[in-house]
Each structure stands twice: as structure tokens, then as C-alpha cells.
Image 1 (cartoon, rainbow, N blue to C red):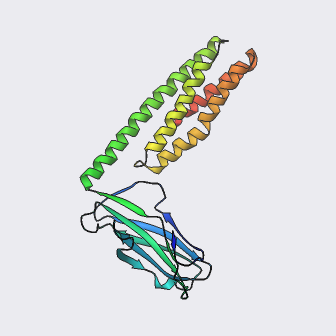
Image 2: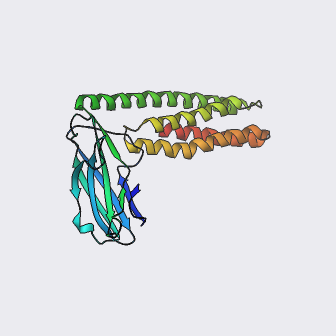
Image 3: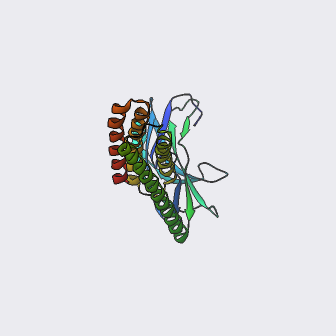
Length: 239
């Protein structure tokens, strides 16, 4: 957001990632990485802590070395201490240009909001999230195993009927996986990455194979069903 001059300034926060809910105990530290840019040269770059009444209520850190530069990148480690009785810490990077005629123009980064919790409450929240993830994964594995068994049985019996139930169940596996990915913000990023990779590759391919088998003739159907079985086995092994 800009105030003042019409010159182009940009302030981009790269860490923490936008859209992620931030929760931490009071007194913990938060790492902030950002980039500030102005085509005519930066005048001042600083990090402020905000309140409900004032966006630049408290100066946290200023970077005088940014003055005159077209682009300035920096990292700050900020102790999370609330102002007054607030239950959160809100931070903004503020950049000013070098316009001394009718400025300076001011650009503020998006707000970085951290909800403060007691260590006990935060630990409970993390544990609840981990438990929820575990239950979700167990249900997902059960559903995939059920579909694999049914796909195998269809292949062995060389059944010629519709595969609608198999397709619907395999689609449900993908849908549940994406729900787990979206709800696992407090769980290790590598878990989300592995599930996302599965949903984008083997799970998608398994649904496609079942649909192709459903539309194929007898001999191609058996070959494609075998491919579906192989994909479902891979999914289970990775889960």
C-alpha cells in the first residue's frame, strides 16, 4: 500500500510465507526476510510493530544502508513481545522514497501477524493437529486399501461391469488427501510435500487408469486394470 508520491516502490515479504497462520509463544523470535525496491532510489527502510490505532507504532529496526539503493534485501530476527495487552504481534516493513518535493512516498508491506499463545496451549494445538493428521492418514490408507482390494478382485475375475464404484472411491482418496494437505499447517512441511506429490501424480494417474479401463474393450481393459493395481500399490506404499 502506498501513500504520497506516485513513484513505484515495492516491499515484498518472502518469509514468513503469505497465507500461513503464525502462532508462537510470547518471547519467541520470528525471522523476516524482505525486499524493497524503488526505481529512483530508496530513502529509508524500517520495520515497525503496529497496534490497532497506529501502523507504525513502534520502531523495531531501521536499515540506513538502504538509502540510495534501487533494491535492498534484508533479514531481521524479531523478538515477539506484544504492545500493551494485545494478544498478537503485527509487523510491517515500511519503505520511503527520496522524493523531497511532494513526498516522500511511503509503501508498507503486507501485515505479518503472529498470534501469541502460552507454550502449553501452543504444544496442545500442535499435538491436536498431529493427532488429526494421523487419524486422517489412517482413514486414507484404509480407503485406498479397500479400493486396491476391489480393483484386484475385478482384475482376477475379469469382470466386465461398470467400474463406477472403483472410480468414485479412488477420486475420494485424492479428495481426502487434498483436504489433509490444506489442514496440516502445523505439521512438518515434508509431509505436505509428499502428499501433494502423490495427489498430483500417482493418485491422478490411478483415477485416469480406472476411467480408461471402464471405457475399454475386454483385452485392453485387463491390461489397464493391471496398471491401476500397480499405481494403487505404489500409493499405499508411499502412504
